[in-house]
Figure 1 (cartoon, helix red, strand yellow):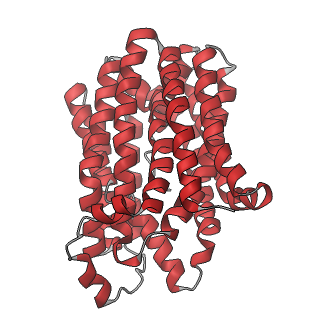
Figure 2: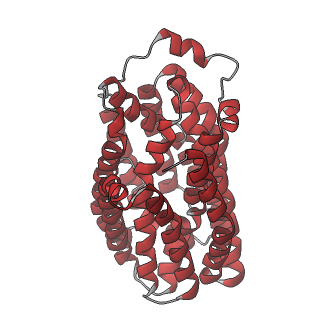
Figure 3: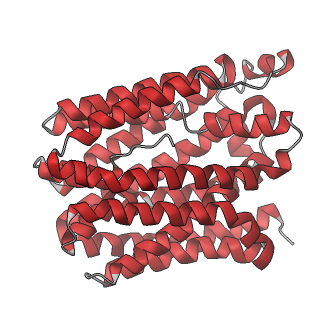
Length: 373
């Protein structure tokens, strides 16, 4: 449930506060870069001081960022607020996934990671999807009020986080974490299977920053009223949640290779469709992005955790998130400049071209390294 509930109006909020597409791209890209810089150190910190403590700090930081969005009225205030959000978020990404996997492992259920993570995605997406419906209606009354309410939600999430029970970690593991490979880069870069897995899923998620950050610009361009943004985001969340819950069954039914091929294929069709159409037909291709997101999340965590050792799990997952943030930062900035130059369809055309060039190579390398039958 811990999400930035203002997503359905965030880009439009910045537009209505007189930020240009390029300035919006800078706000998003700088935030992603801050997350990139702090991602791995935050994972290393989580491996040392504990997952629960880091998650509490993360929730407090996210609450502060939403409060700053509520108070700000210009480019610099929004830039700082978004940077704070990503800085706090760096303590969340990797850490909560590590906590889920380690809890399952302690219970002797590590093989259920896809099923459990899929159900977590389902609960998260459905809950936020329902809340997303209300956000645009609140924004009609006051465009900044949803940010204050989101800050309150994060404070509540912080209180709930204090009730979590963290799995016991051995002394030998803790000793390994302060060794020569503290930040884990050597392990990540020299482990061919882990690197290929990270590159494929990191690229798929990172390039999707163009879709996530400029989807609202597209909806505005085809003259959809802001009050319907919440309904669209709710539908997407429900779709992502349902597919996340059943992704392991889909993989079992059609096979691993076919499922992995489906992930970039749906993304490519989504970008191409939004590049071609400038009408309500574009909504069909936004739905395809939801299909990709629902399939990807549980599979991504299963394949990453399968090849990561216990001693630096949060660190290695954070390195993966760093890679994804790096790609996302470049994608959102390039997307903003492209939209400023040639319009929203041109921005998605650039995403399509990048995807056609890179995705097939990364997918083939991933399948080769994992040696799927």
